[in-house]
Image (cartoon, rainbow, N blue to C red; front, side, top):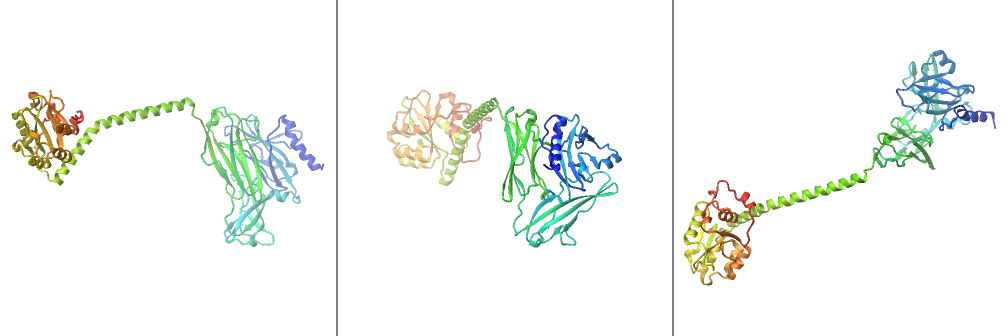
Length: 543
């Protein structure tokens, strides 16, 4: 084992020997001797003091803070600013382990700095980054930013990046139309002026020029932005962040809020990763692991970050949400059933309430339309029939009813009493009438001597509305012809003298079953009676 390897091994064991615990895997940082390097601490506690510690001296650790004096910065060659520890000019004396911590230092982040001589064979692969451009597209060379100092360090001036390619006097970083000959190794130098001295950071960019096609870019495949994972409190959970990359210098890791998630598997929340290389493509999975999901975990946002030197970094942020309990689902189910029942009852009530109004409106519309198209002359035809119980309307009552229909309601009424014995004339009047009102009488009426034939019945059913007036004490009509008419018609009960009152149920029911009169002038039966509003409250009486 060489002396260099022995030194590195001792440096790896040093944190364990000093602290008595096994630290997390340190982040490897490689720097060319004589150049600048910067370490960035992922801690985000703004209320606590951040301390950098150098573990390179075997006899003791050295704490480094922003309060270091200028003489101490010159002696150590180190500069602390915020979460950055800057090695101004790296030498073998700076090689070793460093850590950053907050407050009581219960949690540290570790780094291992390796300084490589300019002739070291390890230097080129550690400091060379790849970039692909496609002919004949434009190509902008990107100088990497890995381990470079922050841009807001006081009294530090950042100079323009200088590009160089072997065999060329000057090299532009922008190529308007890239060609195959433009491929090769480019060197970019970042320079910083601090304390009157210039410090450099050099990178190599291997430009690969491919035939014209879309450049493959690293990307996160899953999860998707704003995905929500439903979990039970106290249960374990693993969220896989799957990404595809095209360079070994690209990396995938997890953040909790603004803080890095640790890889220490003894913590309640940590992450690990696996990778698989297939030719030029690298498939990496970073798994965020929750040992037991807590209420605090539900309040945080977790971000999978893909960091790349060739393209801007990409992020995918997800959240956790507690699953609905069984009791909640049962309550929601009962509420849903209750809503369905209430809506069903309301629909039934509404249907019953509107049914009669709709029916009568349609009947009136059909009748009025029929009278216009058919040219019917009469709104109502009074047809007398003999009541077997020898009770019925007196001749005076029938004439009085005709007078009310004509003078108060505005109906055009024809009384068939004047055409006794003329069957053909009855058929003609039925065809000319919108409604046939069958009126009971104690003596032979219009329908004596079998005058009402099957032809009359068919005509009434086909072209007219039938209303049968019957006495309060009478049963169903015995006549077979009247039974046919009564089957599909409406019945109104005549109760003698009480039915002559304008407020009686007889007139209200009769008006409900009559169509709207063809004449426009009409006085209502009662000042408070409107046909449809009151007919809705009545049962429709079929004979």
